[in-house]
Image (tube, rainbow, N blue to C red; front, side, top):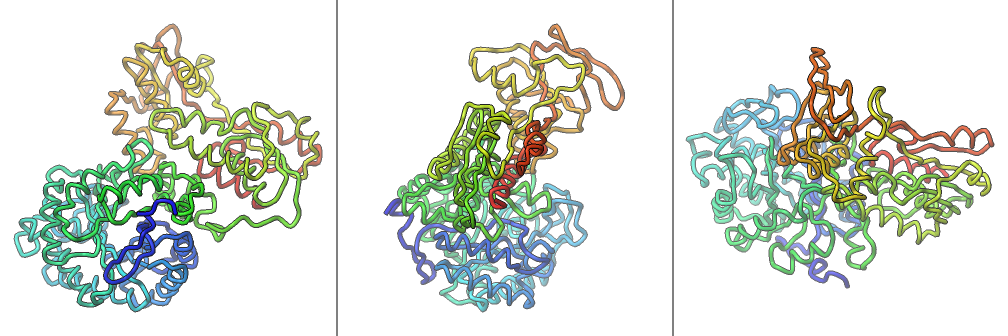
Length: 640
């Protein structure tokens, strides 16, 4: 058996876990308003079927004052039937269902909430909502709500709960000296500020008994000045463990504000970035097991954490979204679909749509985690374009039993270039994984060939998938050869090339633009980033955007919003303010333009006129991010 420690059993509250792997709480928007949905059940059951020992729900509203349509109202008896079906579906596959109990308090992403409550009248770090201060009676009422919600979950068949006291939500608002300025029994020193959490834990234990698992998620460092650092976390943990010890402690960093991105470190961050914090709090936790979380990329990293004694459990969210069979594959030594830590999953949630995944196109669908459905009849399929959309289409079609030929100038397409940019190396294993699957499925690879219509017609295919990508289209009046993709390729080919003053015009606003900006910043003495918009990274999910701004600020990249490049040449560029028309000339011995992309779809009409059924996917249909391109590639394969 591979990774013996990871797959050794563990006992929590008298219940036996089959291994040390948990699917961590992860918002999905798969539910119906206030209720569990069939889609949510299927999503969580597939993680149980894939071998996880614990399957945590996403955050569920623990009290009426926490109610929101996008979270299950676990406090409401009307949710019981759905909760029971969920627990049964997870348990059927040998996993333990754990419900995460949540209350947002003052934490709001959007407009300031009129129904917000909190420990003190301190504004939320993101929305600036100032909450109504909870009275003593209301706090005791909330404790009762948490206990009642936990008891309802137990009746529904759940094995336990995790109390969410992380990410700036209400329990953390009580723990933090910044947001808790009370002078009664619920405030003051660490003992007083932890009273709300401790009382909740004791009430749940009293309501649910000693064989009900109770986990606690809180930060070891929340990133808010004057709030919780490792030293303060040590005091809080000691107070909690001495009075109401949970069955595990999970330390998830960041808060609801400018440290939100700490919650889900992305591909630019080091792997297992918070391990030093768990180690520091190990003594404070005493006998309470620690659940590791945060950018644990593969079974080897998880095994190393357990082998060092830094944790007893490993909680995985994004990796098990990317591959629900991660646990069983790690045990058997099989290839795992790698999570690339792009945080596109969170991007979908923040857009208000159901969660998706850049490397698992079936995420959130009935096919998630299921073996490929064999086609009724094998067809000859030609895929033109070996970027992520084309690779996914070719692999998906071949795994369904079709005879597939894949043309492309290079495996991975634009993603392969992106993978060579600073902090983007995680993309490369995803390309390699798809390429390995293509080889195993006997896809005929014609890489290095830019297919013509004649090449396609010569194979007499039954169906064609065009994934020929897109190219940057420079605005009129700007010099040729200044498109960002060409410049990046040239810089990567010549690592000695440098510039004194570089200028990057952002007309695309995709994460790749800002990853390329890091390369330009490293190769120039000064980089000016210009955009006609009011800011950069506006289209990126908040977790990603915060990281972009942080890294570019650290590289001293100068930002110039509300500007365009009116003219450039001879080491100079004329900038124009898009609102006032004011002009300014700047030095620029390099001009790079991240321009809007234009689909390369020229083959489609020719092939259709020849009578072939053609489906266009990815950037060749219209420029899009990897998540959508991969999803469309798989959809094309599923339709064959």
